[in-house]
Length: 320
Image (cartoon, rainbow, N blue to C red; front, side):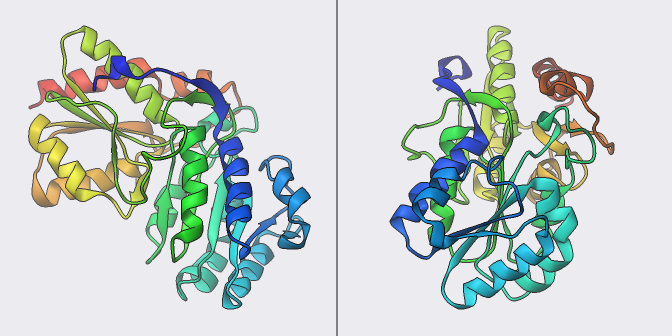
């Protein structure tokens, strides 16, 4: 499989994948409950509310209280999905997540939309770029960042059967939808190889997987063999897949809609430094907040667009 073989099916919001996924999870499991902090519309959970009103809790603009309620619900065997923007799902309630969820290993699913620069016009106060790092540092917390609508839907359904706290991160805009429609290519904790290559490994998560594939197509036209790997589960990291790839290519580029400090890139670098040191180039925000703007314009301004990935790949190959 090459990057050039991967085609867009359509463009759909990853948050829509969450809404459809949690509805199906609710149909399949009567213990699934959904809580929101005054953002039912933005989180696309109208169908769940309509069909399962007795399993929906509107917490209002009280995110910390929502996390506490969710933690309590797990004691009675419920599987609570908390829903709000990624910034409010983490920064605003970190103490409650640490103390009430992670410390006691509660089976809470923290579902976070509107993450990263592609949130767009809402600006720096909402474009959280630190959340992956914050959440992966919590003992026992699983961190999942799916790449498109289909995979977000699959992940949302899968976490209902996954025991333990989960942070599920997705986004706002319509985005390329290209993974298996039935979600069969998604397994928690197992990286997804999008293309096979020998010259450079590109590890990406979330919206940036499609940008990595776009870069791979350009690099292939230049005669460069590219291995793109979708690290949808950042924790637990599929170390075997990482090592198998870099043992072939001898270099890597990491691509994330997140600060390069503490995110996917650092996870990849940690594995490489322990087992197989290689040159690595990071694509992500560089210790900065975002700003208001159009999603694609922001990706260009902050160095996350396709041409930057191409340049990073060529640069890291030259460092081998």
